[in-house]
Image (cartoon, rainbow, N blue to C red; front, side, top):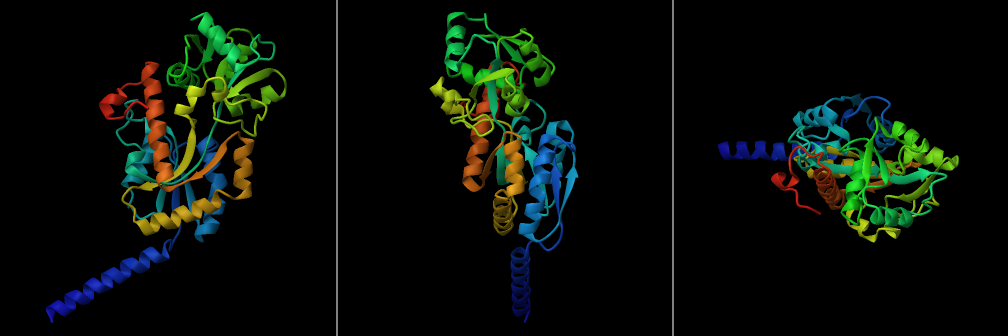
Length: 331
């Protein structure tokens, strides 16, 4: 009788788990944004959220939980139950937390539901610059090591990271002049204080379209819609393809021990949501590329992005912990 009773309980538990997974979600969910309201990550999250709600059939409450360069929100989601009801609207930052000494937790402890999209960098010069192409700039840098001035935001910033990627692909000995942000750096470049500057495409697009700057190349393997006349950087530096695609990215993440059924449901919903016209239009307007990437493809992207960026930070002296000590191989 005891065996029959225990068998009945086991069968009931299995059935209950199966029904619960099948019916996910049964209630509202919590999407935790790792940066504050109004920022790039928040904007992307709130743009995708309505379409994800429609696909899932349940409301998603958006919670901004900033702090620690994303470490607080990442730890918060990692401490929540692995049931899919709490997920992270995250950016690239956790992939650099170990190498920057911020925290040990990175996306290796999460399952990527969807890498929604990424930003694109661009190399710009003033409109009256003598450099007409990226190849001309690279030739002058090679011929005059240290003489060409590059606008920067300091070690670890986007310009210095792009500079490190280029330096790992071709001769690139420049003098970096740091400024307090991309905006001040671009203003200084227009004033003749530096010769060129790698920057986010959203920071430079309007100035390029207005004729104040010229885009020598986008840091991508092909041109992008935001600045269609700017060639891919791989046209001038083919070896850069080894490090691309690269750029700040945005995605949806759950704890790695979340059940496969829940992951599949969330993945299907966000794959659909990422095709929503409102979302794709916003991404295009901000100079972002929609990736809509999940599964092994998303995991491979995260691994490569971490390798490329961690070693770029190491090469520029910005890393607090060597990637080698963390078991991150050089790409």
